[in-house]
Image (cartoon, each protein chain N blue to C red):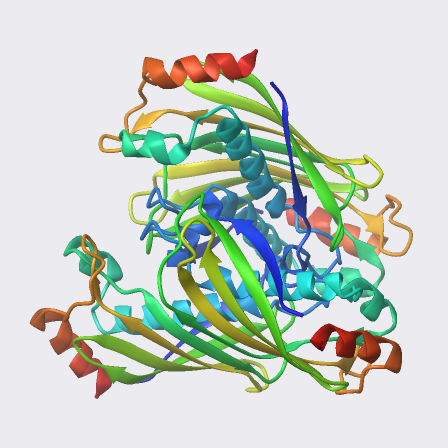
Length: 135
Length: 135
Length: 135
Length: 135
């Protein structure tokens, strides 16, 4: 399953070069990732309530073209690995009006115990939903 | 006691009008407030560890002139009320090189119990430090 | 005309008290304001292309209750003064699921010339649209 | 030349997992990069005034351990390529009190003409300073 969610560029997302500041896309990968999980019936609130957290361990982005104020962007989220130990996603952010690809990205999360901070394996109930999400 | 702390404007603090986006100053009031408390031997980490939180209940800002990329700003923090129930501060943010006042602000925090969310009164040990901070 | 636009709380909008950091609401007032103007056929891009900018001169917020991760918020934007010299808005941000009012706010913008930085009066073509927006 | 600059973690830098949100480190790479350039007599304001901009084309980060509120971090900036066409840097962000490495990163900027958006080569006067910075 590949998901898409839109984000309209706010004035506060821009910088003095009159384009979106590059750090914002890292946040928007999160919007895509959370939306992907939500559409697959996985809410981070529920996982956290069960004592798990899911820190980001790797992120990368390749910037191809700039977004500007008020443009509507589409965040496309493509799962590449969803195991009991980690989640990996690719992203493509493109401009809705002309489909120009602006940024491509990648993130990796691992599952850890909230209390111990130790890396752990995700319980079956979440893992099953993640597996279904891959198909 | 009035405290001052500096902040150099980052590129990511600016917006497409090539000036600092106005919402950043609200964050910088927090830098001033935390710095004021730290200089008076009060760390928010310690208060939180004791089960108290201190949500903002009111904020206001008057914008007089704009700051630009790379300028060094001084955040001046002036306590106006530090009671067992709340903290109130005024702020002045001015440009270091020419002392131009850019923004004047005000915030109010109340003390609440982390677990219940109910408004509470700060224990004596913190209150005493706050009182000394006012002198 | 009163407008409403939604914003879902992102993980990156929260802070270590597990609620939305208060500075974000100031950004969300901007989302409301821009949405109000867009729905009234006024785009900031067009005004800027004509050489006008519209810096914020005053902002205030009263925080009533906290928003949490993943909650859908409604930003309600109420124009209170739209003249050739300035725009004033009130805001109410409430939680969509239970209509609880979380934050009330106010902003004032003035119109200035981009090149001179001087306060100016908005041309008739924009003013007319603003006037219609008030009705 | 390798440079170091400190950043104290603000409350607004944290998220609901009570650690620094990962997107902030991307901003802090910028603090390191700008500080590196400033210490080598290169200010972005001067380059921009000459009609050049320097968009980020690639960024990556590996997250090793979490930073918390009020910790003082050191941003270490290591130039790896400074040519007329691009700048590449590695970063290490470590906690000042115990020297624990938290994040390692990489960025690439290219130089482009502000007006045309075309990739360009940096004039000799800046290039010479960049070359000296490498030694």
